[in-house]
Image (cartoon, rainbow, N blue to C red; front, side, top):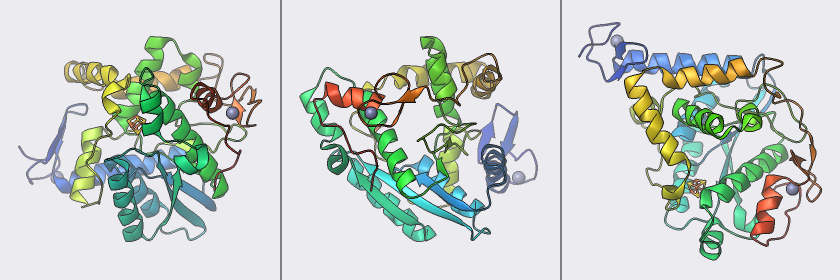
Length: 311
Ligand code: SF4
Ligand SMILES: [Zn+2]
Ligand SMILES: [Zn+2]
Protein backbone atom coordinates (compact mmCIF):
# COMPACT_ATOMS: atom_id res chain seq x y z
CA UNK A 1 0.00 0.00 0.00
CA UNK A 2 1.33 3.44 -0.97
CA UNK A 3 0.80 6.78 0.71
CA UNK A 4 -2.08 8.79 -0.83
CA UNK A 5 0.20 11.84 -1.11
CA UNK A 6 3.57 10.41 -2.19
CA UNK A 7 5.33 7.27 -3.40
CA UNK A 8 6.46 6.07 0.02
CA UNK A 9 4.91 2.95 1.59
CA UNK A 10 1.96 3.64 3.85
CA UNK A 11 2.29 2.99 7.60
CA UNK A 12 -1.41 3.51 8.37
CA UNK A 13 -4.80 3.65 6.71
CA UNK A 14 -7.30 6.34 7.68
CA UNK A 15 -10.69 4.99 6.53
CA UNK A 16 -12.57 7.99 7.93
CA UNK A 17 -10.81 10.18 5.33
CA UNK A 18 -10.32 7.50 2.68
CA UNK A 19 -6.52 7.82 2.71
CA UNK A 20 -3.29 5.96 3.49
CA UNK A 21 -0.28 7.79 4.88
CA UNK A 22 3.47 7.23 4.96
CA UNK A 23 5.29 8.04 8.20
CA UNK A 24 6.22 11.56 7.04
CA UNK A 25 2.71 12.55 5.94
CA UNK A 26 1.16 10.75 8.89
CA UNK A 27 3.24 12.70 11.44
CA UNK A 28 2.58 15.92 9.54
CA UNK A 29 -1.18 15.34 9.54
CA UNK A 30 -1.26 14.58 13.28
CA UNK A 31 0.81 17.69 14.07
CA UNK A 32 -1.54 19.78 11.94
CA UNK A 33 -4.68 18.45 13.69
CA UNK A 34 -3.13 19.09 17.11
CA UNK A 35 -2.06 22.61 16.11
CA UNK A 36 -5.56 23.38 14.88
CA UNK A 37 -7.09 22.20 18.16
CA UNK A 38 -4.68 24.31 20.25
CA UNK A 39 -5.60 27.26 18.11
CA UNK A 40 -9.32 26.60 18.46
CA UNK A 41 -9.44 25.63 22.14
CA UNK A 42 -6.82 28.05 23.49
CA UNK A 43 -6.94 31.04 21.15
CA UNK A 44 -4.39 33.84 21.40
CA UNK A 45 -2.67 32.34 24.43
CA UNK A 46 0.73 33.99 24.57
CA UNK A 47 1.51 34.41 28.27
CA UNK A 48 0.87 32.27 31.36
CA UNK A 49 1.04 28.67 32.53
CA UNK A 50 -0.28 25.55 30.86
CA UNK A 51 -0.46 22.38 32.97
CA UNK A 52 -0.47 18.96 31.31
CA UNK A 53 -1.98 15.92 33.00
CA UNK A 54 0.74 13.31 32.54
CA UNK A 55 -0.31 9.77 33.45
CA UNK A 56 2.70 8.12 31.81
CA UNK A 57 0.58 6.40 29.13
CA UNK A 58 0.80 7.05 25.37
CA UNK A 59 -1.95 9.71 25.17
CA UNK A 60 -0.58 12.01 27.82
CA UNK A 61 2.98 11.45 26.53
CA UNK A 62 1.89 12.72 23.10
CA UNK A 63 -0.06 15.57 24.75
CA UNK A 64 3.01 16.71 26.70
CA UNK A 65 5.29 16.55 23.66
CA UNK A 66 2.73 18.46 21.60
CA UNK A 67 2.21 21.10 24.29
CA UNK A 68 5.89 21.75 24.91
CA UNK A 69 6.47 21.82 21.12
CA UNK A 70 3.55 24.16 20.46
CA UNK A 71 4.73 26.69 23.07
CA UNK A 72 8.47 26.20 22.51
CA UNK A 73 8.78 29.50 20.68
CA UNK A 74 6.87 31.43 23.36
CA UNK A 75 9.14 31.82 26.39
CA UNK A 76 6.32 33.70 28.14
CA UNK A 77 4.36 30.45 28.37
CA UNK A 78 5.42 28.00 31.08
CA UNK A 79 4.52 24.31 30.76
CA UNK A 80 4.26 22.10 33.83
CA UNK A 81 3.43 18.37 33.92
CA UNK A 82 1.22 16.94 36.69
CA UNK A 83 0.88 13.26 37.60
CA UNK A 84 -1.53 11.77 40.12
CA UNK A 85 -0.48 8.66 42.00
CA UNK A 86 -3.73 6.95 43.02
CA UNK A 87 -1.87 4.13 44.76
CA UNK A 88 -2.46 1.25 42.37
CA UNK A 89 0.03 -1.55 42.96
CA UNK A 90 1.79 -3.06 39.97
CA UNK A 91 0.66 -0.25 37.67
CA UNK A 92 1.14 3.31 38.82
CA UNK A 93 4.84 3.07 39.75
CA UNK A 94 5.70 2.13 36.15
CA UNK A 95 3.63 4.92 34.62
CA UNK A 96 5.03 7.53 37.01
CA UNK A 97 8.58 6.42 36.14
CA UNK A 98 7.78 6.80 32.40
CA UNK A 99 6.22 10.22 33.08
CA UNK A 100 9.31 11.35 34.95
CA UNK A 101 11.55 10.18 32.13
CA UNK A 102 9.57 11.99 29.43
CA UNK A 103 9.33 15.23 31.41
CA UNK A 104 13.10 15.03 31.96
CA UNK A 105 13.77 14.47 28.25
CA UNK A 106 11.59 17.43 27.30
CA UNK A 107 12.95 19.63 30.10
CA UNK A 108 9.48 20.18 31.60
CA UNK A 109 8.88 20.72 35.33
CA UNK A 110 7.09 17.66 36.74
CA UNK A 111 4.99 17.42 39.92
CA UNK A 112 3.53 14.23 41.39
CA UNK A 113 0.44 14.41 43.61
CA UNK A 114 -0.24 11.43 45.86
CA UNK A 115 -3.83 10.51 46.60
CA UNK A 116 -2.74 8.92 49.87
CA UNK A 117 -1.30 12.25 51.08
CA UNK A 118 -4.14 14.43 49.80
CA UNK A 119 -7.20 12.28 50.51
CA UNK A 120 -5.88 9.83 53.08
CA UNK A 121 -6.59 6.78 50.97
CA UNK A 122 -5.73 5.00 47.73
CA UNK A 123 -7.78 3.48 44.93
CA UNK A 124 -6.49 0.02 45.89
CA UNK A 125 -7.60 0.45 49.50
CA UNK A 126 -11.11 1.66 48.63
CA UNK A 127 -11.40 -1.17 46.08
CA UNK A 128 -10.59 -3.64 48.89
CA UNK A 129 -12.93 -2.03 51.40
CA UNK A 130 -15.80 -1.46 48.94
CA UNK A 131 -15.70 -4.37 46.48
CA UNK A 132 -19.27 -3.56 45.41
CA UNK A 133 -18.24 -0.19 43.89
CA UNK A 134 -16.67 0.15 40.44
CA UNK A 135 -13.20 1.63 41.12
CA UNK A 136 -13.18 4.00 38.11
CA UNK A 137 -16.30 5.75 39.42
CA UNK A 138 -14.46 7.23 42.43
CA UNK A 139 -10.87 7.02 41.19
CA UNK A 140 -11.68 9.16 38.14
CA UNK A 141 -13.58 11.78 40.15
CA UNK A 142 -10.80 12.11 42.75
CA UNK A 143 -8.08 12.23 40.12
CA UNK A 144 -9.89 15.06 38.31
CA UNK A 145 -10.21 16.86 41.62
CA UNK A 146 -6.52 16.45 42.48
CA UNK A 147 -5.48 17.51 38.98
CA UNK A 148 -7.61 20.63 39.22
CA UNK A 149 -6.22 21.44 42.69
CA UNK A 150 -2.63 21.02 41.59
CA UNK A 151 -3.14 22.87 38.29
CA UNK A 152 -4.59 25.78 40.24
CA UNK A 153 -1.75 25.61 42.78
CA UNK A 154 0.73 25.77 39.86
CA UNK A 155 -1.04 28.93 38.63
CA UNK A 156 -2.25 27.21 35.45
CA UNK A 157 -4.54 29.01 33.01
CA UNK A 158 -5.44 25.76 31.27
CA UNK A 159 -5.11 22.05 31.90
CA UNK A 160 -4.23 19.90 28.89
CA UNK A 161 -5.68 16.39 28.92
CA UNK A 162 -4.54 13.57 26.64
CA UNK A 163 -8.06 12.57 25.59
CA UNK A 164 -8.01 11.25 22.04
CA UNK A 165 -10.84 11.07 19.51
CA UNK A 166 -11.96 7.63 20.72
CA UNK A 167 -12.07 8.71 24.40
CA UNK A 168 -14.14 11.79 23.64
CA UNK A 169 -16.51 10.03 21.25
CA UNK A 170 -17.07 7.32 23.89
CA UNK A 171 -17.89 9.97 26.49
CA UNK A 172 -20.34 11.70 24.15
CA UNK A 173 -22.03 8.38 23.37
CA UNK A 174 -22.20 7.41 27.07
CA UNK A 175 -23.75 10.72 28.03
CA UNK A 176 -26.26 10.60 25.16
CA UNK A 177 -27.30 7.03 25.98
CA UNK A 178 -27.72 7.89 29.66
CA UNK A 179 -29.49 11.17 28.93
CA UNK A 180 -26.83 13.07 30.92
CA UNK A 181 -27.10 16.38 29.06
CA UNK A 182 -25.42 18.36 31.86
CA UNK A 183 -22.37 16.12 31.67
CA UNK A 184 -22.37 16.38 27.90
CA UNK A 185 -22.13 20.13 28.31
CA UNK A 186 -19.50 19.99 31.06
CA UNK A 187 -17.08 17.52 29.48
CA UNK A 188 -13.71 18.67 28.09
CA UNK A 189 -12.84 20.57 25.99
CA UNK A 190 -14.26 23.54 27.86
CA UNK A 191 -15.39 26.52 25.89
CA UNK A 192 -15.93 28.82 28.86
CA UNK A 193 -14.62 29.32 32.39
CA UNK A 194 -16.30 28.12 35.56
CA UNK A 195 -15.25 29.52 38.93
CA UNK A 196 -12.63 27.37 40.64
CA UNK A 197 -12.18 25.08 37.66
CA UNK A 198 -9.06 25.33 35.51
CA UNK A 199 -10.40 25.04 31.92
CA UNK A 200 -9.56 21.63 30.48
CA UNK A 201 -8.53 21.37 26.87
CA UNK A 202 -8.02 18.32 24.67
CA UNK A 203 -5.62 18.99 21.78
CA UNK A 204 -5.70 15.32 20.66
CA UNK A 205 -9.47 15.54 20.09
CA UNK A 206 -9.15 14.81 16.36
CA UNK A 207 -6.55 12.05 16.63
CA UNK A 208 -7.85 8.45 16.85
CA UNK A 209 -6.35 6.26 19.55
CA UNK A 210 -4.35 4.02 17.21
CA UNK A 211 -2.84 7.09 15.53
CA UNK A 212 -1.79 8.42 18.95
CA UNK A 213 -0.10 5.09 19.58
CA UNK A 214 1.71 5.15 16.23
CA UNK A 215 2.73 8.79 16.73
CA UNK A 216 4.22 7.99 20.17
CA UNK A 217 5.98 4.97 18.71
CA UNK A 218 7.45 6.81 15.69
CA UNK A 219 8.76 9.57 17.99
CA UNK A 220 10.20 7.00 20.44
CA UNK A 221 8.38 8.61 23.35
CA UNK A 222 8.86 6.80 26.65
CA UNK A 223 5.46 5.62 27.86
CA UNK A 224 4.18 2.73 29.92
CA UNK A 225 2.17 -0.03 28.23
CA UNK A 226 0.68 -1.35 31.46
CA UNK A 227 -3.05 -1.52 32.06
CA UNK A 228 -4.69 -0.61 35.34
CA UNK A 229 -5.80 -3.80 37.15
CA UNK A 230 -9.18 -2.17 37.88
CA UNK A 231 -9.87 -1.15 34.27
CA UNK A 232 -11.79 -4.33 33.42
CA UNK A 233 -14.75 -3.14 35.49
CA UNK A 234 -15.10 0.25 33.79
CA UNK A 235 -18.55 1.04 32.36
CA UNK A 236 -16.75 2.62 29.41
CA UNK A 237 -15.61 -0.77 28.05
CA UNK A 238 -19.03 -1.52 26.55
CA UNK A 239 -19.12 1.85 24.79
CA UNK A 240 -15.59 1.32 23.46
CA UNK A 241 -16.67 -1.95 21.82
CA UNK A 242 -19.91 -0.50 20.43
CA UNK A 243 -18.02 2.45 18.99
CA UNK A 244 -15.41 0.19 17.34
CA UNK A 245 -18.21 -1.69 15.59
CA UNK A 246 -19.94 1.52 14.53
CA UNK A 247 -16.69 3.00 13.24
CA UNK A 248 -15.93 -0.11 11.22
CA UNK A 249 -19.34 -0.02 9.51
CA UNK A 250 -19.68 3.76 9.35
CA UNK A 251 -16.21 5.40 9.18
CA UNK A 252 -16.32 8.90 10.65
CA UNK A 253 -18.79 8.06 13.45
CA UNK A 254 -16.39 9.37 16.12
CA UNK A 255 -15.98 12.75 14.45
CA UNK A 256 -19.76 12.93 13.93
CA UNK A 257 -20.36 12.36 17.64
CA UNK A 258 -18.02 15.22 18.55
CA UNK A 259 -19.69 17.51 16.02
CA UNK A 260 -23.09 16.54 17.42
CA UNK A 261 -21.98 17.67 20.88
CA UNK A 262 -20.73 20.97 19.48
CA UNK A 263 -24.03 21.54 17.68
CA UNK A 264 -25.96 20.82 20.85
CA UNK A 265 -23.77 23.29 22.74
CA UNK A 266 -24.98 26.17 20.58
CA UNK A 267 -26.85 28.63 22.78
CA UNK A 268 -30.35 27.65 23.75
CA UNK A 269 -30.08 23.90 23.22
CA UNK A 270 -28.01 22.52 26.12
CA UNK A 271 -27.54 24.23 29.51
CA UNK A 272 -24.02 25.33 28.44
CA UNK A 273 -20.71 24.57 30.12
CA UNK A 274 -20.36 28.05 31.55
CA UNK A 275 -22.35 28.67 34.67
CA UNK A 276 -21.37 26.46 37.60
CA UNK A 277 -24.55 26.44 39.67
CA UNK A 278 -22.82 26.69 43.02
CA UNK A 279 -20.12 25.61 45.46
CA UNK A 280 -19.81 22.52 47.60
CA UNK A 281 -21.02 23.08 51.17
CA UNK A 282 -18.25 20.81 52.51
CA UNK A 283 -15.08 21.80 50.64
CA UNK A 284 -15.96 25.03 48.84
CA UNK A 285 -15.18 23.72 45.35
CA UNK A 286 -17.50 24.09 42.35
CA UNK A 287 -20.50 21.76 42.58
CA UNK A 288 -23.68 21.18 40.65
CA UNK A 289 -25.57 20.07 43.79
CA UNK A 290 -25.19 20.83 47.49
CA UNK A 291 -21.93 18.92 47.60
CA UNK A 292 -19.35 18.18 44.93
CA UNK A 293 -19.04 14.66 43.58
CA UNK A 294 -15.59 14.20 45.17
CA UNK A 295 -17.04 14.89 48.65
CA UNK A 296 -20.07 12.69 48.02
CA UNK A 297 -17.78 9.80 47.17
CA UNK A 298 -15.47 10.52 50.11
CA UNK A 299 -18.56 10.30 52.31
CA UNK A 300 -19.46 6.93 50.87
CA UNK A 301 -15.92 5.74 51.58
CA UNK A 302 -16.17 7.40 55.05
CA UNK A 303 -13.13 9.56 54.52
CA UNK A 304 -12.37 13.08 55.73
CA UNK A 305 -12.89 16.01 53.37
CA UNK A 306 -9.67 17.28 51.75
CA UNK A 307 -8.35 20.79 52.18
CA UNK A 308 -9.46 22.95 49.22
CA UNK A 309 -6.03 23.48 47.67
CA UNK A 310 -3.43 20.98 46.55
CA UNK A 311 0.35 21.20 46.89
S1 SF4 B 1 -8.71 2.58 35.02
FE1 SF4 B 1 -10.16 3.29 36.59
S2 SF4 B 1 -9.27 2.66 38.56
FE2 SF4 B 1 -7.63 2.52 37.00
S3 SF4 B 1 -6.55 4.49 37.12
FE3 SF4 B 1 -8.14 4.68 35.54
S4 SF4 B 1 -9.93 5.54 36.62
FE4 SF4 B 1 -8.52 4.74 38.19
ZN1 LIG C 1 3.58 10.32 1.98
ZN1 LIG D 1 -16.70 19.11 48.01
